[in-house]
Each structure stands twice: as structure tokens, then as C-alpha cells.
Image (cartoon, rainbow, N blue to C red; front, side, top):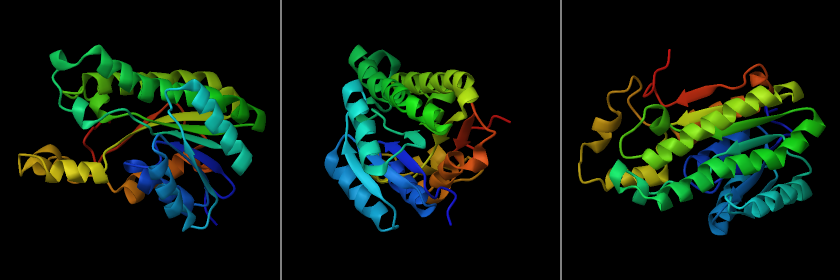
Amino acid sequence: MGKLDGKVVIVTGGGGGVARGMTIALAKEGADLSIVELRADRGDEAAREVEKQGGRVVSIACDVSRRDQVDAAVAETLDHLGRVDVLVNNATGVSLATSNLAFMDHGEADFDHILGVDLMGSFHFMQACFPHFKNQGGGKVINFSSGAGTERLAGYVAYASAKEAVRALTGVAAREWGRWGINVNAVCPAAMTVGMKSFVENHPDPDFEKKAYGDRPIARLGDPEQDIGRVVAFLASAESDYLTGQTFWVDGGGSIHA
């Protein structure tokens, strides 16, 4: 028996990054998954991995910045899986092109893209799922923010701004939706994804990883399944029913707010 048996979870951006391990962690707890991904091939690949855990899964191609596509993705999830219990807003528009980019080198296009995916994508899915959560007596929303925002990381002004806006979105929804049994929380992860591993291995400074992460109390990046995924599974489960409007830094102590 898993803590998410019978639950249907939508994971946006579910075909890559931290979500690849996170979806496995959710499936191991018994969740059925709707993997929403801009690139259909990545979504299908992630779905095949989830299927090995024995749960039901559907892969849906969707541009989360487009409200019409978001509404269609939620409708397709309901058609295939029958309900929606948990929404994980993980999709992001950040890329190497907008990483470590000086404040004065950012342009409006950088903001438009990242805000469209990270902020408006989360907003679209929250609005689209809300009626279903309300009608069935509750639900869980887990929004992905970032320490780049909370720590005001240099070189990430567009991304940091978008992710802090996501935290504001989280708090307002938590305050408004609690009366209907809907919990809304945020996670700021630090994980060794495939993309991050490639970034570290190809960085011109061979000591980059040690310099960037070696001074945190837990001196490593997290595992997407074991470290990040299990926290998300907790927030998706009944174990977190009395938690809402909170930010969880799952980053080995890279950010300390105690």
C-alpha cells in the first residue's frame, strides 16, 4: 500500500529534469500519473518508465503557456484517469541561454518566455484544476519555485523574478482555497538532473561543482527521486493535510530559513 493509492497526479514538465525521478517516486507510492510535457517524445519516454511501476499513466503534449492547451490537457487527464487529485507545477522556461546572464544583458523576450512558462503556466493549471478540486472536496497543489529567487542569485534576474512570483501565487491561493480543503505549497529543489550533470561536466572551471555546492551542510545536489520526489510525495499525500502556504527548501541546506 502506498500513501498515494488511488490518487491522480498531474506533473507539468514531467518528461525531463527533476521530474523524471519525481514521477517514479510518486508512482512507487501508488499514484496514477498524467505527464504533461512540451516535447511529446520526452513525455512518452517518461511514461514508459512510470509504467514499469505498475500504475496508470498518460502522456500529454502541452505548451503550458497556452491556456487552451492547458484546458485540453486537464480534460484529457480526466478522460483517461477519471479525476485529478494533485497538481505539480514543475514546467520551467529556464535554459542555458538565460543562465548566468548579467542583469543588463537580459531582454524583454527573456522575461516574456520565462514568465509565460513558469508563472502563467502554473496559474493556468491551477485555475483549470480548481473546479475539480472544489467539487471533490479537496486537492493538493505543489508549485516549483527556486532558490535562485529566494536567494536573489546573480545572473538569473528573469528566472528569479518568475519563481518568486510563483511563490506569491502559491501563498494567495493557499489563503483563498483552504476553505475547500485545497492545500497549496511550494518546493525549492536542488537536484543533480541529467541537464545539471552535463552542465557541471562541461563547465570550464573543473572545480565548479565543489565551489557551487561544497559549502552547504549536505555537500551534494539531491537525487531527483530519493531526495526531491519523496518530499513531493509527502506534500501530495494526506500526511500534509495541515500544511499550506509554505515553501520547502529541499536543497541540502543551501538555503537556511530557520
